[in-house]
Length: 70
Image 1 (cartoon, rainbow, N blue to C red):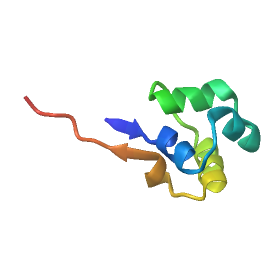
Image 2: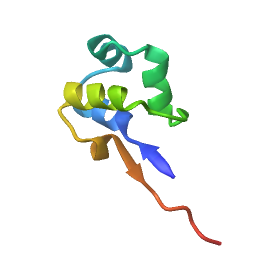
Image 3: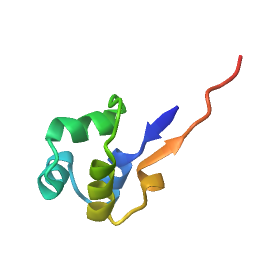
Image 4: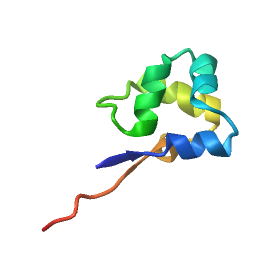
């Protein structure tokens, strides 16, 4: 499973979702969906804008957590 860490990055940069949305010109519902982890696909262009604005790497925005095997 992919877990998004955008909320953490925003807090570390003292920024809220609306400010990021305006700064990178991406719809606020898209930013919100990433923060909640409900987004199904993240366009590379959006990921690029997030990384540029927050001065981070794609791996800082998301992480892979293996599913637990039963």
